[in-house]
Image 1 (cartoon, rainbow, N blue to C red):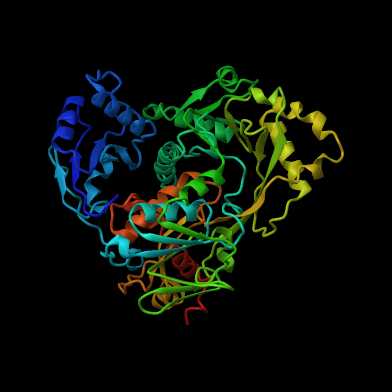
Image 2 (cartoon, rainbow, N blue to C red):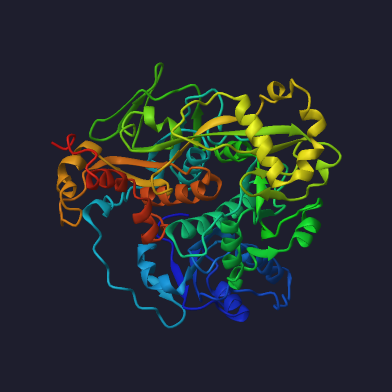
Length: 544
């Protein structure tokens, strides 16, 4: 996406003939916005294309709408030639101006903009940077899925990007599982997390299709989330009643689940038919292959300073300078300059690997419950994972390996029994140490930290009154660190959330349309972490 593209909007999806006429009149690069009703995703299945161009356009639209949602913004960059498609819930259509900085050209009767509501001072973003993207040099710390996606989104907008990774290879920490699942474990209620997951799920699915079309390192096999307890059964039941999302997920019986899976399934569940497994490292490597990106491994950040014009960052052996700085440091944030004071939670997790056998090779879809297992890839299944909050040990542990095996027995005993001969060997626990142990990062509210970074010490001084009265009105502008951002704390949901958040950060830096709604920008604002500490009196002494 480039700056200042025209924006054309409809208060409802156009008919096929209206769309064709519009495309013929407007072949240039543009944003196209369709406002959608809460009970219906647009579809054009009954359309009969008349020529090769129409057939190509029809297929592109069908692909663009395949993961659309009525409850969240759905953005598909390059949905078809020269067109970036946006589906906006009609309930949010009055806030279109929050996404686009240029005038909106309505192709139907306009939806009036809602009156702007003044955010709290700490929620007000810094002024937009209006420089040409090609003049910017973005420094990104961390080369997991968040760092790689942020680098890619900045690069495709024209900026020069340098990525610093502390380890010898990319995607070694929280993004290092051999196979991860992409689906959206959402609530049936319209929470911020549900909105984020629905938007992010579609964004990542389209990203995969665009960047890795061959599907050798991922597979859209579908993900079955089982009704493994009463709470999950009730959640899945309520979700299945949302029939406007039947193209995303649907309830399936144990019998139908068995047919889909290729093995015996003993529980009903919710089937995400476009869900996928993927090898995260392959996506990270593809994202970082953009020619505008330079990667440096074995470069742990030890110092970052701003001289009034540029950021200067230093490892033990090198120094770099750039116009902007973005932290995508995951669990290592707790030991990273500038962001180490943020109140983030560390969660240990370990996944396991097992060689596929004749029986397990019949598994055709990914299974999810209290744990998960993926179909075999290159002769092995990945399964797990453990969840240990506030544990900073990232070494492989045999106890966690045994825990994952026990959980697999609960998830699907047929698969567990197929591996039993191998696992009955006393040495099998230690021979399985190729499983991946790593630390994940999360926030207290289980939403990531995404956006411009405030100066934490200055914020504690400026907003100290919140320790006495959380409703106190403080109008002092937020003391932001200049041109510094963060994209971290995605927990176990990073495949669905990190790429979308990366796109929004790149949009904020380069003044292109914002992908996150105002509601999500406020909910994910990293400054909320400092304000929460102040409100709960945890940093009163620091603010003196």
